[in-house]
Amino acid sequence: MNVSTNTYQRPLTRVIQRIGDAAGKAGRDPSDIRLVAVSKTVAADRLRQAVLAGVETVGENYIQEARNKFSELGDLPVQWHFIGHLQRNKAKYAVRIFDLIHSVDSVRLADEINHQAERINKTQPILVQVNLAGEPTKSGVAPEAVEQLVRHIGTLPCLSLQGLMTMPPFFNAPEKVRPYFKQLRLLRDRMRKLDIPNIDMNELSMGMTGDFETAVEEGATLVRIGTAIFGARK
Ligand SMILES: *Cc1c(COP(=O)(O)O)cnc(C)c1O
Image: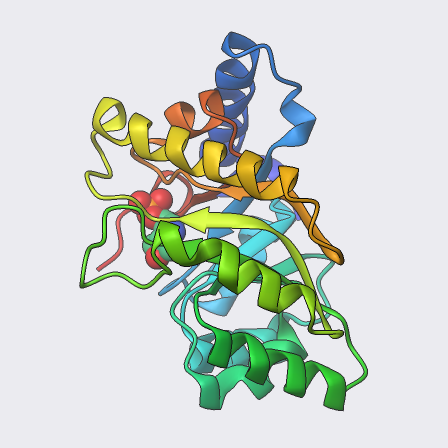
């Protein structure tokens, strides 16, 4: 297909450029930051175009929606990340599709993902989602409970913990979210120092369309961006 007619070429290039600029400002290597193109509500044909335009990782929020798209697009050379709230009874589908699950926030969910991964002989990469502001409407484990969950995950043979994820309050107000991004980085650094066996603590999944540059400045390694690539959702 002719790249110049691809709707997503321009917004994608722009987002990648902005990530690069933010990395430069913070003295970071842009290649340490992965763009997760958040494609919830984006139909399979549009998502295919985005992948042809250069998207290498897609982020999905809903299992059924992701299953439908995966059945159509599973042939594409793209990584699939799960970023939504995962119900335990959907873990069996999640392990079949996703290269990284960002949203593990309880011992019971970790146990179930481990169990389902074991059944298909997989080691499932995951992140622990942290609810930094204690917002009741958001998923995520409280910061004080992260260490306990991380230690538990370290004992589960079919999980590979890679880092932390957060969705702070005040998205679209970058300077207001900066303290939360910083807090997640400090928490990650603290967990890393504990040297818990069988876990890695390199990834920080934080930053969306309204605040990803701030997240990159504060150490994000995965930025989850929907609107800036696909336009506003209905
Ligand atoms: C929808 C969503 C995003 C992307 O949001 P945009 O503002 O459209 O970039 C990122 N992370 C999560 C968890 C989401 O649900």
